[in-house]
Image (cartoon, rainbow, N blue to C red):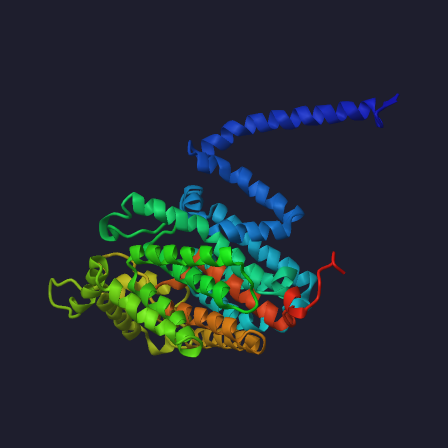
Amino acid sequence: MIAGGIARPQRLAIGLAVVAAAAAAGALVPVYVGAMGDGIARLAALPAAIALGFAFVFARRFLFLSVIFFRPLCDPLFEAMRFGSGAGLGGVANALVILMAFVLLVEKPAAVGRTAVPMWVPLMVAALISAVQAPEPAQGVKYFLVYLSYAAVFSIPFFLEECRQGMGFAVRFVVAASVLPALCGIVDFARGGGGGELAGRISSTFEHPNIFAFYLVFNISLVLYLLKSTLVRVSRAQRLLLVAYMALLFALLLLTKTRSAWAASLVVFVVYGVMFERRMLVYLAAGAGLLLLLPAVQDRLADLAQGNERIQFSQLNSYAWRKLIWETGLAWMKPESLPLGYGIDAFRYYSPVFFPLAGNFNHGAHSVYVQWFFEAGMFGVACAAWLFYRLFAMLASGMRTDRLGTVILVTVVLEYLVMSYSDNMLSYLSFNWHFWFLMGAACAFNTAGRPRAPAAVRGVAGPAAR
C-alpha cells in the first residue's frame, strides 16, 4: 500500500535511518565535547566549518564576499577556535578561498589567463621553492598557503561581474567592511588600549597596533578615492558622512602610535596635492603643525632621536633595533644561499643565531624586503618585482578613463611598499586580503572594458521614462 508517494517499507527504512543518525549524533556529542574542551568557541568550530562547506557548495559568491567582509573581525575568534598549535577555522576559510579560486579558474580559465595568472605564477613558484627548503616544514606549508590565498583573493574579482563593471562596488565594499573594526577601535580606546610595551596604543580586533594602523591608512585612501574619483558618484549627504568618517579614521590612526603608518598616510595626500589640488599641501602642512603640538606625537617622534647607537646595556629605539637585525641577518647569509635563500620563515627561525639581542626569542625581520631576500633569495625578489611591475602597469591602464582615481590607487600601492619597509606585512592576512581584493577589482575593471557614464551625464532617461 502506498501513502503520500512513499511505500510503507520505505517510510519505515527512512524512519529507522533518522533514528540511527540521531542516536549516532547523540553518542558522538560527548566525545566531541570531550575532545574540544569547555570553550564555546571550540565547540562551535566544527558546526561553523560544516556551514562554510555548505555555503561553498550552494552560495559560493555570497561566501566569498562574506569572508572578505568580516575577516578583519575574525582574528580573535579564529585564535579562540584554534586546536592547540595547529590550524583552526581560519585555516578552513583560507582553504575555501583558495579552492574557490581554483574552481573558477578551471571553469573560466580565459578570465585570468592573460592577467592574474602570469602575474602570480612566478612568485608562487618562488614561494613553493622556499616552502620546500623551509627549516620548519609545517611553517613552510602554512605560509605558502597564506601567500597562495593572496593570489586567490586577487584573482576572484576577475570572475565577479560587479567588479568588472566598475570600481564603485569594490571600494564601497572595502570601506563598509572597515566600519566595524573602527567601532571596535573606539571600544579599545575606551578600555585604555593595550598593556606592557603597547600601553596606550589601540589595536581594535587586530593582533598588533601596527596592523590596525596600516588597515586605517588603507581605508583613509579609499575614502579619498570615493570623494574625488569621477567614476564613483556620491550624494551630498554621503560626502559629508565620508568626511566625518575620514576624520574618525585619522583620530584612530593617531591612537595606534605607529610612526611608519603616519608617514605612509601622507603619501596619497602629497601625491594628490602635487598632481591635482595644490591647496591640499597647505592643509597638510597646517594639520601636521597642529599634530606636532600633541604630547603623544611628540613622544613618539622624540623616541627616534635617542637610542640610535648600541652601547653596552643601552636600549635601542625601534628603528635602530630594526637596522641592527637587518644588518646582522644579511651579513650572516652565505654566498651559496643568495640565489634561493633559506626558506619560508627562516629569518625568524635563525634570528637567535645571528641577532645579538635575540635573547633566545625568535624575531621576525620587520621588513618585507629583508625577509623575502633572506627566505627566497634573488630569485624570489625578482619574482616579487615582476608582480608589482605588472600591477603598476595594469593600474596605469586606467589613466585613460579615470586619471585621478588611478593616481590614488597607484599611491595606495606605494603606501603598501612604504609600510613593507619596516614591518612584517606578509603575515597580516586580513589586511592583505582587503588590499589584494581591491587591487584585483581594479585590474579586472581596467582589463574588462570602459566605465559606463551615469545616465544624467549621458543625457539618457532611465528605463521607466523611456
